[in-house]
Length: 378
Figure 1: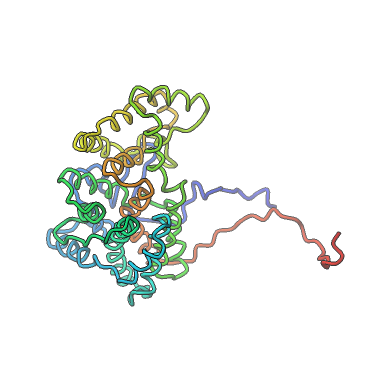
Figure 2: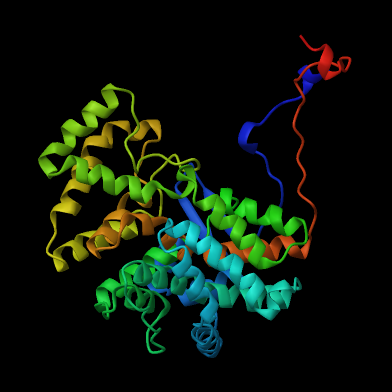
């Protein structure tokens, strides 16, 4: 009987729900948020506007965007107890600290346990503002500094860099950070979004779902690519070594980090918007060689594009963070900052037609057998 059951390991190719949020065409290398191409959004929009689009379904009017931006800025506050918790676990990995702090917020904020749609929206906006604050506060505290207070005059992306570094970013650097967040904002039923939906399926609150998403993102098979790319760049060392590095990797049948994607067979459509930004930021920061190393790897990998090994978005992200002097263990938490609206809208969609997500596993263990008391087992 079990021979007739088809197993789709990892649920690959399985549609478990309908969604009106993002369309991913892996063969063509296309990504849409609510019907808008990622190219238009990356070139013309802001992270705040994309947040509104994802959560509410339409691009905002000027008044709607101003009101939404004001809500985000008003939510830039952490209970003092969260700083105490961060201090208590300051030597932990930033993803563990972030997850712990978000879990603590569920216990510290009165509205967190409410599970209606309006509560999800309120809590989602608040968490979107708080996640970058937690990450920046941890970076300050673990280095013996006081956390930097948010600046209400700065955008979400610029304020994140300000809180992290204690200095105002240039206009170009702030814009590149904004684009980075836009490109990571939503990506369908990826592992962390699916995990969050499983949590909402149990009728849990939004904080619980975000904790689940953070735990899932922390796994290196999901969120670790940007960090691995930077390790690769440092190992290569200079542009002239790129071709030999790729040749050695391919000869040993080893993957080249930053190439290939679970979904995309063509180039990841998000990658092009980071490429030019890395070049400009490298020149601004006096380190153009990082970009040159990346392009050397891209050139060496061209023969493998026909096998679906094309550059992905994380190929460039890690170098951006490196140019800002951001420690590698913060790369995945930065991913979480961008992905917040995607997680929130996935949770909202799940809640609107909620059902407990309960797939099956096909049993392949022993047949029924007699129980033997412990004293008679030889």
